[in-house]
Structure formats: C-alpha cells, structure tokens
Amino acid sequence: MEAVPEDIVIVGAGVAGLATSLGLHRLGIRSLVLESSEIFRSAGYCLGTLTNAWKALDALCIGDSIRQQHERLRRYVTNSAISGLQTSELLFEKAKAKHGEHEVRCVKRKILLEALAKELPTGTIRFSSKVVCIEESGFFKLVHLADGTILKTKVLIGCDGVNSVVANWLGFKKAVFAGRLVIRGCAEFEGGHGFEPDFMQFFGKGVRSGTLPVNDNSVYWYVTWTPSSKEEELEQDRAKVKQIVLNKLGKVTEQARALIENYELDGFISLPLRFRHPWELLWGNISKGNVCIAGDALHPVTTDIGQGGCCALEDAVVLARCLGEVLLRKPKEKGEEEKDEYKRIEMGLKKYAKERQWRSMKLISVSYLVGIIQESHRNMMTFLRDNALAGFLSGVVLKMADFDCGKLTIS
Image 1 (cartoon, rainbow, N blue to C red):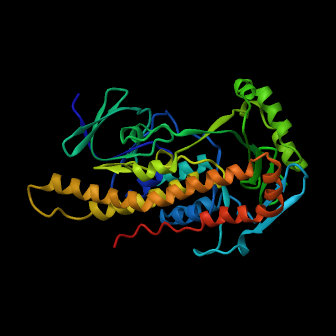
Image 2: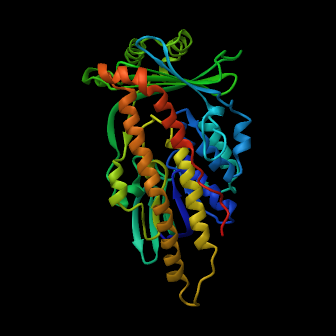
Image 3: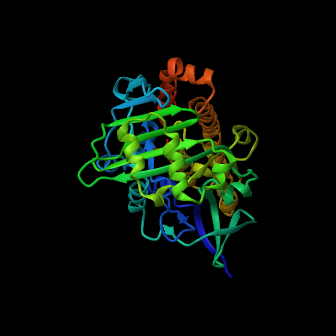
C-alpha cells in the first residue's frame, strides 16, 4: 500500500494529544491525531486541575469555557481516617504562589476532551486507528496502522499513554506497578449534592481517599490502597471490591462514606497505579530525530499530587511552541529542504525534551514520595503525618502546581 504523506502525526487522542494538536493549530500548523478507540476514552472520569493546568489551558485559549462548567474549590482539607479529626486546612486564595493566585477545580475528562476537539479543524482526529509498527524511511517515519494504512510523516509524537507504542520504539521500558490500586467515580445528584467547595482527603492505615465537587450536581471521589494478594485475586468481583473499599475507609465523614456506599456497583473497578522510574528520563531519549513523547507516554505518574493531566497540558504547550519555532522558519537552501527541515525538527524536539526532562523527573519523584508518606500504615509515620507533616504535604501539592509553562507566542 502506498504511504499517505502527513506533516505531523500524533498518536493518542487523550489530553496530551488533543492539547498538542490544538497548540499547533493555534500556530497555524496542521496535525493528524490517531486514536485507537472508536470514541474518546473517559477513563478516570475527572482530573484535578490545578494552577499550572489553567496556565496551559489559557495559553490554548479554552480556559474560560472550561471554567464556566466547573466549580472553583476553596480549601484543601486533610483528615485522619484513624481519629476522624482534621489534620490540616489550606485556603487556596491565601496560599503563597509565584505565578498568580492558586486555582483548583475538578474537571470532567469528557468535557475537557470535547472542548479541545471542538477547536480543531474537521478531520484532525482519526478514530479506530491503532498503531502497530513504526519504521524509518530517510527523513520520515512510516506509521503502520492495524487496518493496513501506512502514514509517512515528518514528525511523530507519542501521546499514547502508559502502554505507549512510541515510547517503546524510543527504548523506554513499560511503566512499573507502584504496588497500589485505585478506584474512582463521579456521582451525579439531580437536586444538588450539598458538598462544600473543598478538596477533602482522608489518610489512615495505608489508605488514601478523597472527594472533590465538580459542579453543583457532580462529585468526584477516589480511594487508593496497597492490596493484599487475596484482594488482588478479587479484582473482578465488584461486589467484594466495594465491600473491601468500604471496610478500608475508616473514619471519613458521613457525607463521603454515603457518596461511595451509594455509588453504582459497576463503577467499582480497581486499576493499578503505574509510574516511570525518574532516572529513565535522565538516561533515555525523550526525543530522537523527528520523534518524541508527551503526557503519560513520557511521565506516567502516581495520583498523589494530582499532576498527571496537569503536566500533560504543560507538555502540549511547550511542545507546540518548540515545534512552531522551527517549522514556521523558511529553509536555508533550495534542494536541501527535506534535510534542513529534518534538522530543524530534531533541534525543536531536543529543546522540548530538555525543557520537560527535569520537570517530569521532579513530578514523578515527588508524587511517589508523597504517596509513600500519605499511605503509610506504620505507627511512627502515621503519627508524623497526622501531627507534623499534614500541612507540609498540602503545601507540596500546591508548590508543584505553582508553575507557568508560558505562552504559545513564538519569538
């Protein structure tokens, strides 16, 4: 089959893929986004969207439309699930920040994906397009799809999640199991939910749970814990999984317990938390020639500081800007267009990789360490967490979010 020429192919129509495509579109650069599923995947239900994510969404010019559909949260409150007592309280508007006032909302993943897609030209997203193989062909990459289609592209960007085909091609290992499971859900209330606009978290006996209002009628919740071998075996039995979760909650508020207790049984699907060892980003190739990765393909991270989706949005803005700087430049010599363009693309992707390397490593490391402290069941760590570290850990979450990826403007 003859290869179909494309300028930029992005693998994965998740947050990173669509945001990267939109960033390029804002700069007048066309891309093709491949999605293996038939429709947008809504795994995860919602995203904790912190200050750094709103900087990126504003750079992409869709921040205000997302804000209108999601409630701004007021406080970050932590509680001991052992004593039932509050251990810390942090008002977002009073928290110190270098890059403007802190802004925290819980955003529905489906709404975010649809908002990104709505801004893209018709035909940008191609569904049911699973990548099975990547080949080199001079200054191009040949992307083979499951249906037999072959795409010949100048730039290949992997935004295809924790099981990334592109990351594998670049030599990265699969994301490793963090030893913990997570269950998430988004409950809907026709007459309003009655929750305060607070990010509530509960810690105790190796379990972390939380609730975040999304809007007047929706509340997102999650529970993470380290499973025993017996609990892992019960993974497919949703009734038993639900009972395990309810037994592990400890002394959470009655409102939070009722939220999870009344949630539909079909929603009790436990998923493994995975992450990439940060040193892999130090020694590995985030970019190679005209290929790079972004989002979970680059930095799969545990959920402990709520930075997975936020960091993916940062990646998108930085990547679009770096590519725009080199692609919008005219070639130096006639007859050398392909070679010159390849070299410029390689230079742009190297700049992106350098800019995202340490930021990604830091977020992965901090998230993993915070998770160890938050979900420790040891007596000494529980005492320190509840009596000395609760406020510090809350501050760490906001410190990691106090970041500005910059504008899309090209100098």
